[in-house]
Length: 144
Picture 1: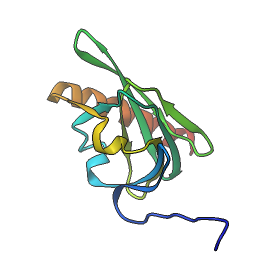
Picture 2 (picture 1 turned 30 degrees about the vertical axis):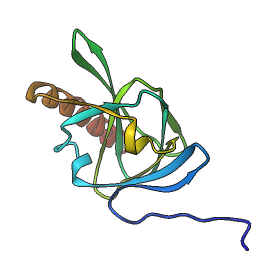
Picture 3 (picture 1 turned 90 degrees about the vertical axis):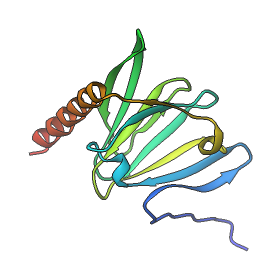
Picture 4 (picture 1 turned 180 degrees about the vertical axis):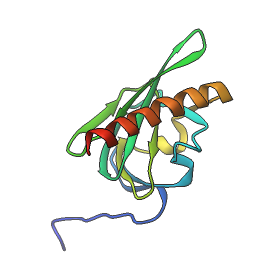
C-alpha cells in the first residue's frame, strides 16, 4: 500500500482526476473549444468557488460582470505559482493556447450539475476576444 497517491491526465479537455468527500481536482488540457477563436460562452457556478492553477502554457482568465444584461469583461493572464479563485456567482471562462494545461479545484460533481451558461452574441464575442488578444500580446512584448 502506498502512502502517496498520484494522479495525472494527458487527455485533451476537462477531466476530473480526483473526487473525494465533497471536493474534486480536475485538469483541463488545451482543446479547440477553449482557444480564443472559439469561445462562445461564459459560465458561473451557484454553489461553489472555482480555483484555477496554471500548469503550463498561456492561459487568460476571463471574468465578467453583468450590467443591464450585458457582460463587462475583465481579463488577466495567468501566471505560474499563483492560485486564482473565482467566487461562486461570477461569470468566467478561460482562453488557452495550444499545449496549455490548468488544474481546477471545486466542490465535487460541479461539472455535472452546478453551472449556468451565457451565450455570447457576435459583438460580445468580438469584444472579449479583443481584450484577451491585447492581454496575450502585451505579455509577449513584456517577455521579449
